[in-house]
Amino acid sequence: MGRRKIKIERVKDSNTRQVTFSKRRTGLFKKANELSILCGVEVAIVVFSPGNNPYSFGHPGVDFVAAKYLKLKPKRMNSIGNSSSDSPNMEKLNLEHIEVLGQVQEGEKQAENHDEIPKQNNVTKLLELKELRDSYKELQDCIKLRLSDIEISECLMLLAQDPVVGIKE
Image (cartoon, rainbow, N blue to C red; front, side, top):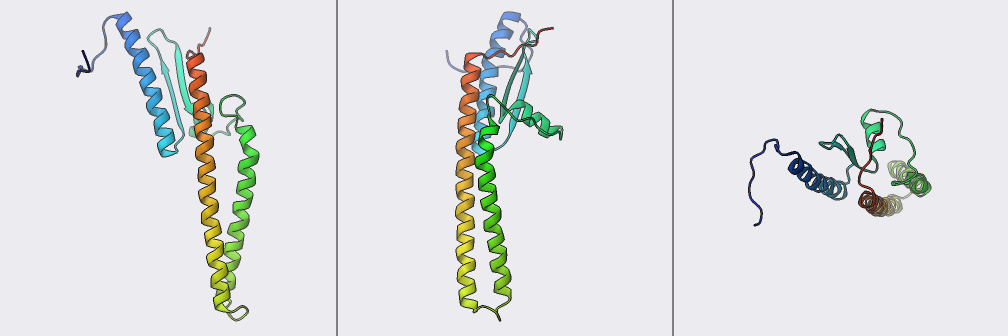
């Protein structure tokens, strides 16, 4: 049978509508996951089924993205994103990054004051510091990408185990 173009309109039969929703929801979450991986963006999706059941997907987490969107201070995640365990590594890398930037700025200042240090020596130090800064940024990007991949895998595994997040009244 294969794929065919369908007219975009509300599906009339409720059983067919539920099946269509389930299939489309999975595809939507997969696309959101791809978008977050390929573009390094933060994504949150919340949809309600025809039966009024909520489903959500978020990277690094729905609460985190919603809080950022609403400009609130995000809560530390304990389950999926586990940002509390990643924070020490990122904080350490950020401190190293700040230190390297300080060294680069110091090198640039010394390059301006060519009376104190020979210009050739100053330029060499500056180039070395810029190379170090670039390699640090590359390492930081690799680590962030790897952490994102791990968080996304955890999200998808949890969604596969228990895809319904219900609100009981």
